[in-house]
Length: 169
Image 1 (cartoon, rainbow, N blue to C red):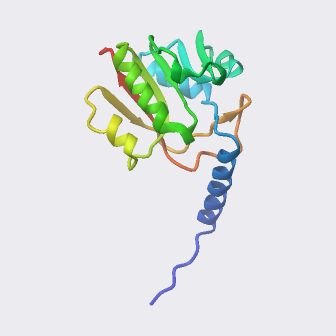
Image 2: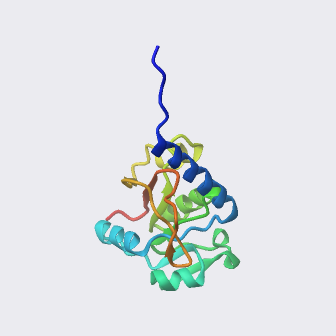
Image 3: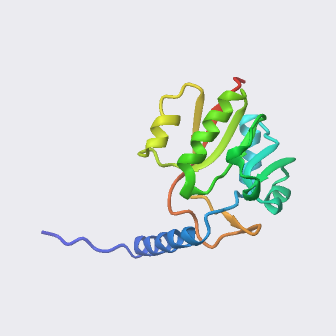
């Protein structure tokens, strides 16, 4: 019987992922890379003016005309125009459910950057088999930003764009 040899680069990747996961527990608000964000909007031809989950500084860097901060509690607001969301991943089920509700209630498009957790209850409830939903899987791992600068490590999980099409294009 042959022994499996360890993969040094794989071990390093595991260490980086574990470190990144510990950082997520400290900081759950990762900024979307601006170029990646606007390139995607250009690709899908939807340009939301509203970021529903951000800070004033990030909204300014990202050039969103309107935004909701943590203090404004977006989950108590009406999202009545096309919106973008990169929510705290520890709270994804609650945010995804509200995004789904708001997109269809107000007949607006919701563009969401999310981890690609296709085995979760929220994925099957709101994304899977939803005829008014598009999913665009992102090749490779996203390098999110912190304070406007690229983070040291890539995300330890795959990401995707979810589009709730409350208004058909």
